[in-house]
Length: 265
Image 1 (cartoon, rainbow, N blue to C red):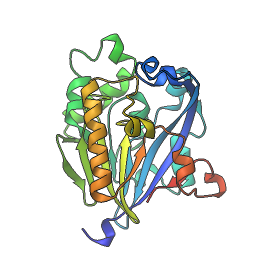
Image 2: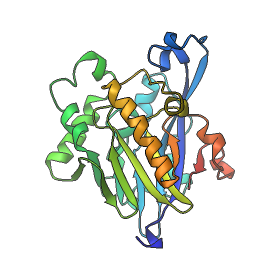
Image 3: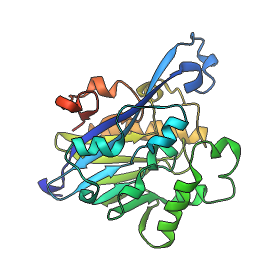
Image 4: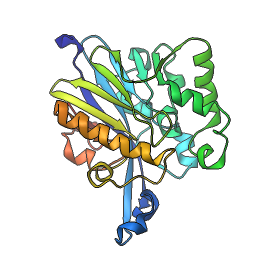
């Protein structure tokens, strides 16, 4: 890997909502702590190297988000425009899982390559995806569009731990969703571990507190172990998928990107 294959890594916050700790964490009553409001932010991630521009997930479709009661702060494509990125500039989109808030704008990038975890595609196009406890987390039309791209040969599937592009490696952990992926990026300042929804909040990993939505509880715990391993082995910076602390922990970009984007590495 050359210097040209290291990336400026940015988190883009495009939406938010207020939930509660009891709603967010599985069996919260078992921790014997009082309930309290909890903010949940929505992100996708931009990777820029000298060679290419890559997105990790694409956020939710703004109309879908509003229908689901989320507050849109800036529409994802408008956020990219503020960063000087046009849809045609994006060389590759890495999908970490198929929940609605991660694949809602894929149609805007028809020229980009696509990488998707194979267990995700197989599950969400399979017989159990329509069951109520799963179905509420996806938009069927979005899954169908990705399925069509897969069948047309436009999707590279990821099945295991492998390099997607120079400087970008995928680790499948499952847990939250059957094929949940963690993406490790060679950042300009060191490894950046994009957990996506393997952890929504930092305290999930730090305190072994599973999020309320999962396909495999033991898989979530294994995912926490893998994230700790990646953090400790490579001294990587682990970035949670929905934690407001991301906007406080990392330096902002200022100007009209204040509160929208931060630099992770």
